[in-house]
Amino acid sequence: MGKYLLLWEVDQARVPISPQERGTGWTALLDMVKEDLQKGVLKDWGTFVGEINGYAVAEGTEVEIGNMIQRYVPWVIFKTKAAASLNQVYEIVKALTK
Image (cartoon, rainbow, N blue to C red; front, top):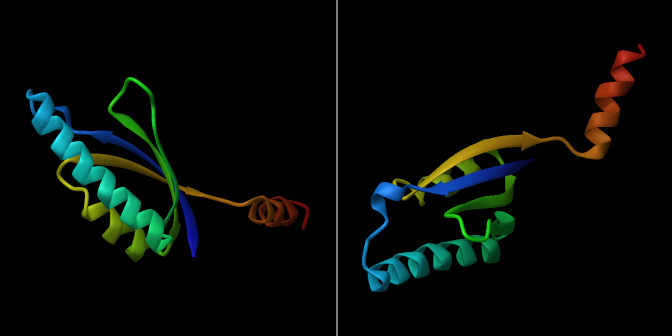
């Protein structure tokens, strides 16, 4: 199982002008995030204040992460980065000395 940093951004072309419609859309997206946090796929999630983008930390297989991300398409665009733990980096560095 891998750990991933997900940098996300809401597609501005899909953001409604009406504040009420924006509130409804954001609530739906936040409910999905809450569900993914409760399932344990997402370990952390946040938004950058004053922006319509943010980050999430997810754990799972590539397929699990891909399936989770697809739930947010086409409203959210993701950049996904695989992350190595401290122990994994030690293993990589140890291989340099052999």
